Structures are given as structure tokens and as C-alpha cells.
Amino acid sequence: MAQAVTDIKVKRIHPKKFALWMALVSIVMFFSAFTSAYIVRKAAGNWLSFPLPIQFYISTIFILSSSVFFYLSKRAYQFGNLSSFKKLFYTGFVLGILFCILQYFGWEALNKMDINLSTNQSSSFFFLITYAHLLHVLGGIAALVLTIIGIQKKHYNHINEKRLLKLDLTFTYWHFVDLLWLYLFLFLIFQS
Image (cartoon, rainbow, N blue to C red):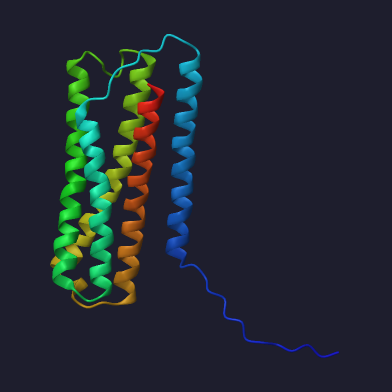
């Protein structure tokens, strides 16, 4: 009995996208371990609750806004509006930098309240989680800086698949650390 063979086109994920998604899964596991340990340690007692300084609330608004600007920036690039692409991209970048700066000022505000890394297990976990997240954000900022270099060298003046892939990878990672911060921020608010 003869079988009919049909041409089936299988859409495969780009290897770089696959690698990024695997890295994101490992980061989720990393922060899941921290938040699980936080819950377990909190249940053991001797836990100091403290209010989060306003800087952390404002920084959350900034990082969420940066993702919106990066999304709009990518859309502008896809539609060939290079002027809007650049303006929206730089606005998102500045908001990302402001997130980092406000995180620092938030830590300083905690230090002024005599809450630091060695105050209590709760503050140790708080600083560890927020420091670890900021390191991941700095990785995103490094990728954004590489995009800025490409923009300055006029590599993004013409739309092509290679540039779209780079933007997609960079923005996917940024949106991920954005959502990760939102999760961590809400976790820290409701667990303190």
C-alpha cells in the first residue's frame, strides 16, 4: 500500500530564541528557589517586617513603563518609522536606568531606617532578592547598550530579519526582567 507524502513545512524556533527561553527558565528556577526559601524561613519565626520605601514603588512604575516604550519602539521599527523607533527606544532605556537608580535610593532609604543586609533574615532575603534581580536588569541594560551602539552606527536604518531578531531577543529579555520584578515586588509586599 502506497502512502501519500505531503510537504509539511515545520516552523522551527530560532536557535537564539530557544537559548534565550532556556536561560529564562533557569532564571525563573533561580528566583523560585529564593522565594521558596523566603517563605520557609519566614515560617520559622524571628522575622522582621518593614515597609518598602516609596522608591521601590516608583521604580516599579518606571520599569513597567520602559517595557511599554520598548514594545512601541519595536512596532515603530517594524513599520519603518525609524524616528519614532529611536525616540521610543531611548525613552525606554532612560526609564530602565532610572529603575536602577531608584533601586539604589530605595536601599539607601532602608539603610537610613537601620535596615540593612545584616539586620535580620528578612532584610537579608530582601537585599539578596533585589540585588540578584538588579544584576539581571544590568544584563538587559548591557544588551540595550549594544543596541544603542548599533543605532549609532546606523545598523538599524534598514529593516531586516537580523535586526528584528536582535530587537526581539533584547526586548523579550527586558520584558521578562520587568515581569520578574513585578512578581518579586508583589511577593515582597504581601510577604512582609
